[in-house]
Image 1 (cartoon, rainbow, N blue to C red):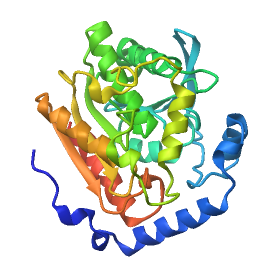
Image 2 (cartoon, rainbow, N blue to C red):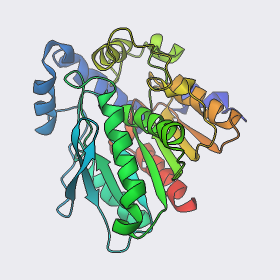
Image 3 (cartoon, helix red, strand yellow):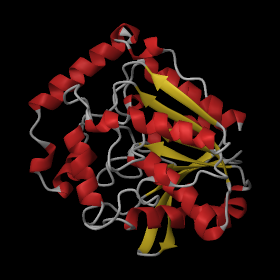
Length: 315
């Protein structure tokens, strides 16, 4: 593995638009009340009303929702599909396993449909703390099994991808390992993993993050994990922290993260382990990018999206 040019980590490598966005985010988040002073449902409702730090996306008028059977009951799966899909991207949203929902990124998924010809499905998995581990991973596993079983009949293709942002990237890696280990299945051609938390016990960059309230802090990570993982569960279990699992048989992966992200080491370590298992992994480090900077309208986010589209179309 050839590591990145060290200059990518310098402040001089950060584009002015990226630096301006970071300063604006820190100022806004510093002025906001403490997220953790409110009950989760109040935070969820605030985000549904567009009062979160990320720009709100409009809902797709052609999206449909199907409910599939899961271990804990029905699991809604949101589908945005062209007439004749060239593949299917199973998207798992982020939000610290506690927040957000499957229709928050309809505009982004519509762009993926337009640029790749694939259908996009997004999983409405159960959220902590009301539904702690393993409810979320169980729902994602059920959605993946539904896609494997029904995908060809419903979409006319078995060209499948999986991915997501932050907690969604974590759940994507867990789902890949579950399908292989529990069902003997390796159905996905590619994994699009954006700023995932792959070691819930915290990597050095997560443990020592010192850039202020730039989307995700060390305290945030600790409190998300506390809400998601019941006491007594080993944080190094691969089902919790997929960095510790076997990566044999994994699909090609695009692993992306900003250099100003508390979870930068998670992506660096995961890409190294992916390649050590003999699997294809491309690590993209974006200078000065905050946690899931792809959700903001800056040039670097457009470049990152183009990289994702190229990955989909090449596999």
